[in-house]
Image (cartoon, rainbow, N blue to C red):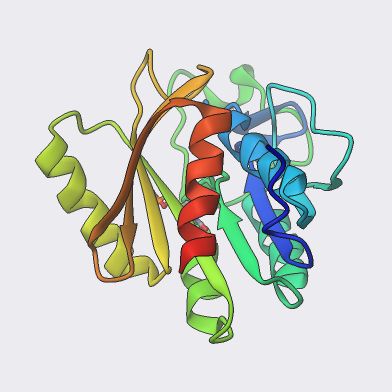
Length: 222
Ligand code: C5P
C-alpha cells in the first residue's frame, strides 16, 4: 500500500563515507557502503517527501529519482548539509564522516624514497557536523544521527549510544553494531533507535529498505 505521509516534507539525507586526501592519489576512508542512507532517501521519496541526498562515497549507484549532491570530504559534506538544512524539515545523518583528516595534504604524490622507512601522519579533528546541526536546529526540525559501533555486548552498545546522544544533541540516534562482516556492505541491518532522552523507541532488523521505513515511522509519529 502506498503511503504518502511525507508529502510536502523536505528531507536531507547524508550517505556514504567521506575521504580525506593525503595527496592527489591517496586518502583516509572508511568502509561505509552508503546502502542504509540510500535506502532512507528512497523510502522517504516513496512516501512523498522532497529528498536531497548528500552523497559521499557510495558503493552503489545513487537513486535517480532524488536530487543528489556529491561530496568527498567531511568539510564538503558540512558545507552541503548546512546549506540544505536551512530549508529542511528532517535531516538524517547516515554518512560515515571521518572524525579526523590529515593535518596537511601534499599537492604531489608522497614518495617513499623521500619519507624513508617510517612516516608519521598528523591528523586534525573534523567539525562534528551532527552536533552543529543539532545545536543550530529550529524547534520544528528533526535531526537524526547514526552510531555504528563495533561493541557487540548489547548493554555496552546502548551505553555508548546514550553517551553519543548526549554529545551530539540530536532528536534520535540510530545505533547499529558493525564489524568485519556485519553492518557496512551488507543488505541487512539491525538497529536500536533512542530518542533524545535516551529511551529505546524502536528496534528493527531486516533489509536496509525495511529498516529505513521503520526509522521514518519513528520520525513521523513524533
Ligand atoms: O562520533 P561518531 O562518528 O560515531 O558519530 C556518528 C554520527 O555523527 C553520524 O550520524 C555521523 O554522520 C555524524 N558525524 C558528523 N560529523 C563528524 C563525525 C560524525 O556529523 N565529524
